[in-house]
Image 1: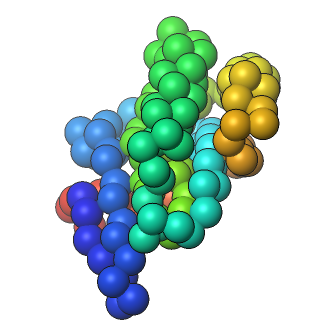
Image 2: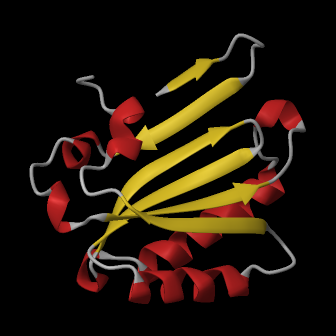
Length: 132
């Protein structure tokens, strides 16, 4: 998905639509949202160097937060200088530790924050579902 807001700033999102419509969502009640803040320059999109670092972070997260670890990669959104990466997880303790370890590898090169919260029905994803 892509579009623009009222100010003409682009928004780009890539989500696994079949996973968002999956009826087994309740088995993964913990939402993990990782935010990479790279600033508003470049029309709200990352420059090439930053995008490369973000992709490396996403690969690291994908290795640590995978289906065998009880996590599903739902997708990403880039808007107004922030890239948000979403995972749904079976539990929060190990996934939170895995996110912290991945973030530590990029300390000093990316500004990263994350939150883990209970979202049994994945309501956070409602705005990304095509059938809404």
